[in-house]
Length: 93
Image 1 (cartoon, helix red, strand yellow):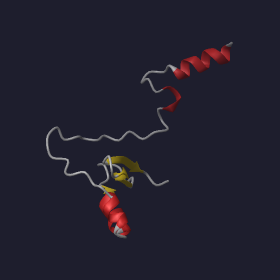
Image 2 (tube, rainbow, N blue to C red):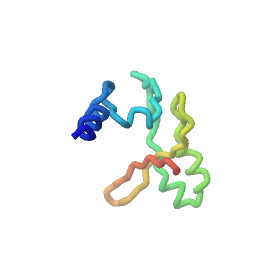
Image 3 (cartoon, one colour):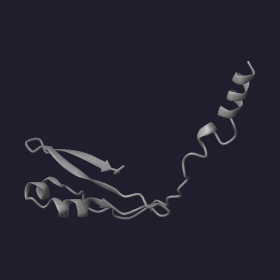
Image 4 (cartoon, rainbow, N blue to C red):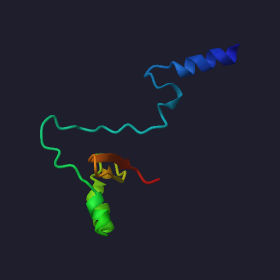
């Protein structure tokens, strides 16, 4: 019984994160309210032309302030007839 009470207290501790609050680093990210996000990056033409290194370079996402996590994002065409594209955001492990 006491084990259940202690577990309940730990899981409902202030802050709402319970036991997991110290596992994840808090990163403050400022998002601009206005501005142009730019054009979508369609990678299929680069891949089909054999420019894979250029596609990888272009798809590199700038790191968030206070974070050094590398990631890649862009669109891959999955059906040219219907102009269907898949958005991806890849975080290497």
